[in-house]
Image (cartoon, rainbow, N blue to C red; front, top):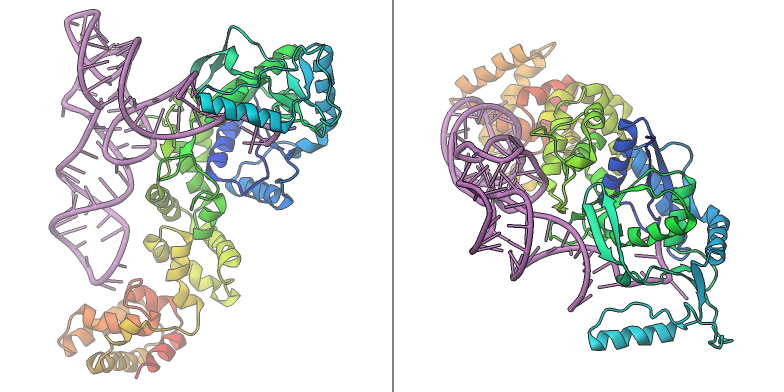
Length: 463
RNA sequence: GGUCCCAUCGUCUAACGGUUAGGACAGAUGGUUUUCAAUCAUCUAAUCGGGGUUCGAUUCCCCGUGGGACCGCCA
């Protein structure tokens, strides 16, 4: 059996994390079975579709490594084909024109609401040979849905879903302006792309019953369906693009690594025993739809951070630096070329303090910037005694030709004894002088990550 | 309101019908340390309720309850 999967977002907003997970599951299944993974941009809503969103979607997917086969499909380019299928459905007796005005429909809905009964289009024009066609109304084309009986879909995640056909109305497949609606376009495209597995969000479940009828009317093979539960916001409702930390850009902005996000998303609603960390290869090998749970899961930022931390700690420093460099370029200030080597050298301790690329960037600021600002609260800590101590340090430090951990340790231990203080008594003022804050990396790490001149310059400034 | 779906620690989840209900994140406590972190050790914490079926139910069935999705000429 061939596996042809697809991710079909509409470019009406930035890609959010639920969409990324849907794409991931499709991608994983395709890779696992040596199949295809396509990207289809569903841009038939001309009003809301924007080129910038399409770009953002494509870039986000490529950022997280979900590369698609072939060029992306642009749905609007296939409209002619969709209309041909609409024609064919008319010929086969599965579609009809409906001349109800929008007001008429609206009235019906209100009436139903008042009576407390569910609205379904009343099929007025379904068999309306003797109805007078109004001149001022342009028709829509509706699909002739089944009226009686039940329909079942065998969902690969949800199991069998059984509904009564009476609740599926005669849905619109061609708008007043003649353009195809989602139900038609998606079905026609899935068929012509030979999609074998449609993996999408839970919110499409009802659509499946509509689309299935189109497949059957056209005598096309019906693909497999898998509806995965939605991701909920921390509040517990469907994730919307307005939620904070919903779009993938929100995560990129704080410096989440693509692999970490991929790993997090994989584990959200899917598990393989007690395993938490999955390399890309492992996830391809181990992923299956059977392991996908049926209940929605909530987003958990601290979990994302923790996984990200894990990936940062385990990343080769050269690669980590490339991420950092790119991150700084896009979201902060570019890293000056002259600072590159000292940053790479310092990454081994910087990364141990970081949950995100932004943390690394912030902690590395004292290397990146030639001027350091001392926080107001920390200036207070530099009293006369600590100034005296760091001046003594400076005096001795200048004599050292090549600073290393050993000779620095000797120097500082000497100062501790001489001043009858402890490590903190020497370390804290030094850290403030060199980094601008009482928080920061270990004091030896700081000194050795700066040039001798730079250390001298910064300490000399304190007086 | 109608239809459909779901239900294990706060969160993500594991557990052929037989486990002291496991792991991870978060939280708490202690050790280490040079500040913040990190790290190590320990701890707290869950099968929504009620009925069945069964020798035995987290697991199967029914009913409640709670949560969610859908109900567009959006996708």
